[in-house]
Image (cartoon, rainbow, N blue to C red; front, side, top):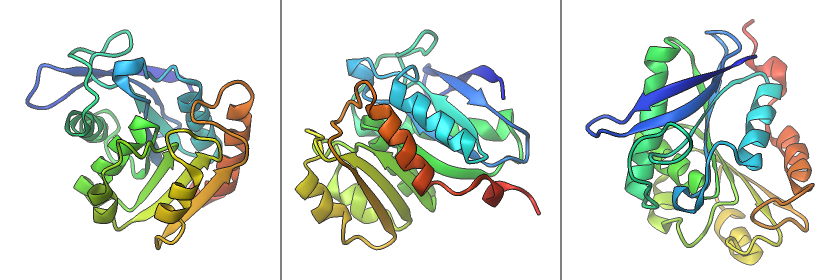
Length: 216
């Protein structure tokens, strides 16, 4: 698969989002991926975002990773660390697929760190059935948002994640129905160095085999 750079407008605003699309074929299901906090330099160049892209692609999916407004090379607007603008950006990315890849089924919403909050907010808005969260930061994760989501959650968190304390993670996600929780031993929030390889292996365990996405 080769990458295409997209410019995605955010409805009702002058903002535009830079996005990277890897599309295997028009009928191949797709995963959307949001990066970390835009105010602190989170972009689709982040190694965790790249690892998510590769894992979804290895699972037989196309991928769309996008930058929040005002981040990356080509996004337009003022970066915001608030949930509502992040949700608007995520919804814009999803909605743009209908014009750039008409008829393409959407398989996963996902995000890393702050991007996972945006993914969950968009999933609640869309009543979307399947979300993958990597390192969701508890200080930014509104309990009401989590309570409002009724779909399937897959959550990957490092045991040493300073923004998602492991005991709190187990308390919040461990007993939630329709949730798969993976605690990555010895891994911190930023997945420095070889930690992304641990994440990559974990993703192979939680994502479906490529054959599951092929048409009969």
